[in-house]
Length: 410
Ligand SMILES: Cc1cc2nc3c(=O)[nH]c(=O)nc-3n(C[C@H](O)[C@H](O)[C@H](O)COP(=O)(O)OP(=O)(O)OC[C@H]3O[C@@H](n4cnc5c(N)ncnc54)[C@H](O)[C@@H]3O)c2cc1C
Image (cartoon, rainbow, N blue to C red; front, side, top):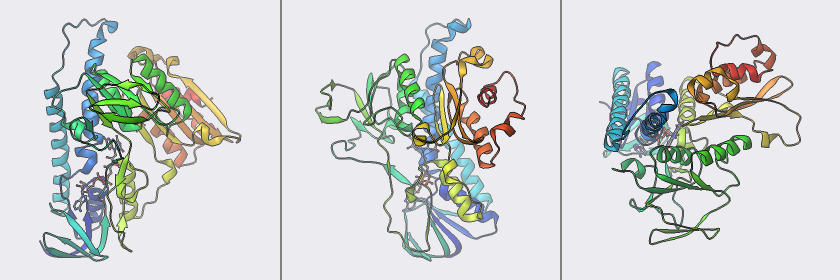
């Protein structure tokens, strides 16, 4: 290892490792500093662990419900230790893959905390590394607010919740963004008594209003209790008092009210990408920013898709109906229950909604099995200005959920 590089990167999450791999592909000499684990929050504490545990919870719930498919099961049980073991193995496997890719690309990886000294120097392990260009991709951490400070025992962050050795009897989730909704679904699938408290008028406040209302209906069906326009007034001796006077006694509380970019003193000419930039805090946004930065491939930030996982999936992109107040627009809407595939799968809850103006698609909002994959068809259409009429010329396979996209075009 030497001390002179074309590119120095701090942070080995999706933003940092993508930037490193793409720069190395261009033949640049790259050094990457990571103080914890390669893969960052996404792989180690975020996207991947939650989706792995979510999948286990879904299999458990589906097995409990298997009799409606004519499958008899008895004495269905889960072993949470094994669920966590599988989650850890998944992380490890994927992490090794990224580490190997970095090694093959000849990126020098240094495992330690690093600090940017000036636009061309990084300090780490008491050494100075000279870099022609520097990227800071140090990510974010769970937001801490007064009165809800994490104590790693009762008031837990999304990091702490991954360390639970066994599931609680009951949980209160504060916040109904993607993290809150996904964990509500996980806990509820495993039979934990689950309650969500949301300050806004509806659950999942960043979604289209019709999506939020549908999720509220789905939560009611699944017996997930929720409060909207409600806050936590105080917590004393593990007793939670809400702003409406209700008193709750959960075994644990998950505080999922957002994430704060890691504090850094911004230095001119240093590029800040991913969660630390304080824009859209999603792994695919971080990856696109890294590619834009290194390869110069631009992307339309307004077309960044959002996905909330679970049954059914929720996915959206572009304008929501509440953004279009007073504007003329066309709305097409198809119920998932009109699709043959949905009945075959027993996944009939949800809808596909497409918003357009003069034939140009401006928003898509989907609550359905496979919503993440369905949405991507529309993201590609929107990115390439493929109009509703042009999409109608496309042949969609049967029986599929994507037929619903086709139906929604008419
Ligand atoms: C529970 C949860 C679920 C999520 N699910 C999804 C999802 O389904 N889809 C999605 O798109 N996004 C999801 N996210 C968000 C996603 O994880 C982040 O947007 C993404 O990880 C941001 O990538 P990043 O590279 O900017 O930062 P990070 O992934 O946070 O990586 C930053 C890295 O920098 C390192 N670092 C920080 N400071 C230093 C330093 N001084 N020196 C050396 N190293 C340092 C950190 O250790 C870390 O590894 C989820 C997040 C959480 C918490």
